[in-house]
Image (cartoon, rainbow, N blue to C red; front, side, top):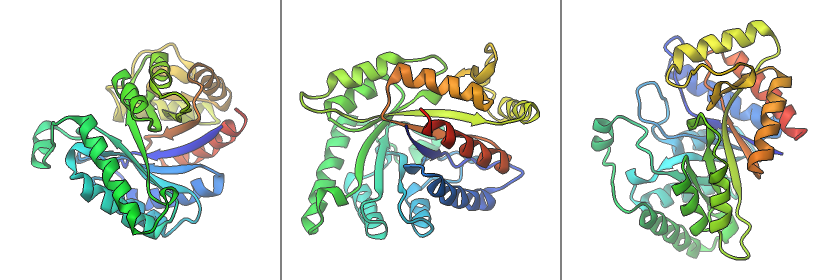
Length: 296
């Protein structure tokens, strides 16, 4: 099973944004060594996040990697003029040819007042996507083939987003990590809305952290309860102690959880994020998950 890394750019108080960015660069290099398919950078505009401009960090990562695909996950389209966004990712393609993904979403990634200051446009989202696709196609006129421009994706957390991705025949990444319950209707809707003869491509976005010792697992659960209290529910234990929005477990527990999710959603690829202030635990978790995904 293909697996990719999604970095949400969270900056913890004890670490700070400078070190957080350095850790992202190191993690991207390690992901390439481990055989990850992609590294995606999320766009957020809260004070606890270091990445309000994913394309800047993608450009930096491109200089430290050679073959892994790089992209946004997601660039929040309502903040952008479509041509401006297409042009930025065209430039990224010059830096890393045939390695760039442009995944878009419609969330605010910020509180309402900040979103308004950033110019969040509440227009027709489907029209914004169509305009962006047209601008990307226009840029192929400079002599580059379709396979060399940024690959357009849609990222979302709902059936509506899945339906839109299917209608537009776009690859779709479902953010299970924003849903505490399983949502198999999402992939069913996506597959059913694809045009005849189109296979589509479905990615499953997970918040998953794996550790080998009981002490590390307990430490991870305490960290998540502290830093992500709105997601820390009262589940029944094991790898789903926080519901399906966050998976925390031993390699055996994580293997079972991932296996169940793969059986249910039948994804083409897994996208894994991990919010953890202990970088060594986070790094080891990605190493373990790479091993588990390879066996799926």
